[in-house]
Amino acid sequence: MYGAAIEYVGWAYRFSESRKGHRNAKDQWLRAAQAIPLNIAEGNGKATDGDRRGYFEIARGSALECGAVQDDQAQYSVGIDTDSDSDTDTDGEHEQTGRQPLSGGNA
Image 1: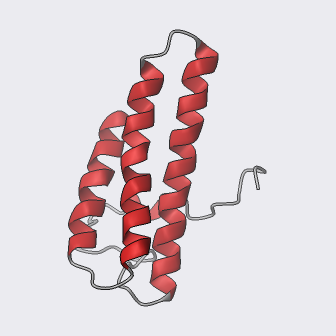
Image 2 (image 1 turned 90 degrees about the vertical axis):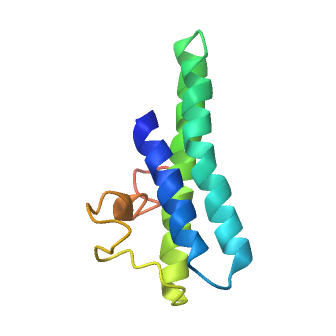
């Protein structure tokens, strides 16, 4: 999971560098993307299951936030295509990060 989170951060940075405008949304996206592996790492350093779970839940929330930013920016034609493969996401792995942010009953 940590490795995939690190890959996502790299992809998010590379992708955001090619986009113009909407600086606040890009900044929010990159902060949320960074928070995913940071919280996974910090959670893995905790001694109890409850402490670990709390950090993993924060990482999950950050992943959902990233998906919401991608969806939001796609609505404004910033260039993040969440419905098709692109050169920067050839395996389609990242396009599904949080596609339905309010699903799962935790709205």
